[in-house]
Length: 231
Image (tube, rainbow, N blue to C red; front, top):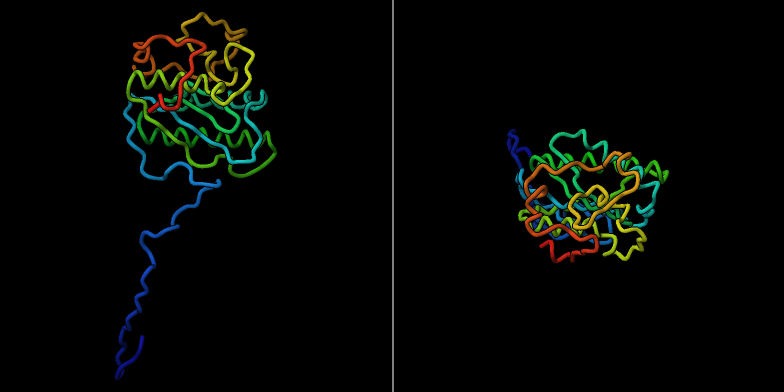
């Protein structure tokens, strides 16, 4: 401000172009070497549609496909059963990421459910690995499954994901996935001691995930799905 003949006069601030507004390089930086999941507004989740969700770990962390880690993650999945409006129906544990097929009562319930799940997982893994800090590379990626064919492909993709990544599996089913809890196999499957262990997943509540996908036939144990099948 400056004075003019006893009066206070408001001065003009100089205009400098290029400040504020959308610009290259603005916004939150990715935690990894490149950008991960987009931070645009998520699509609404109809209550009758399940979702295929992926969580990726930061680079440099120990692998998840260890029995001690799987035991802890199963406990987390079981604990999530207490959460209303959110269900884990299928899962797959890979070396550096996790796949889930979930049901939620809406977009907010999905977001809050995944937030709670991520926090529980991070606490357990940090305790095992004796570390602190962030575990996941970015926020979760979610794909809404809208048709019976899409749901069936997603189930195949998640339950057989270990073969996609070249894991050597001696058993018929991957112990790091929820296939041992699945009743949609074409073949008869018997899992030792399955009756004495709490299932870490819940029965589906939506028509698509419970009955709809079966219109296209039960799933063979040896069946595999390509990523393009999820489109």
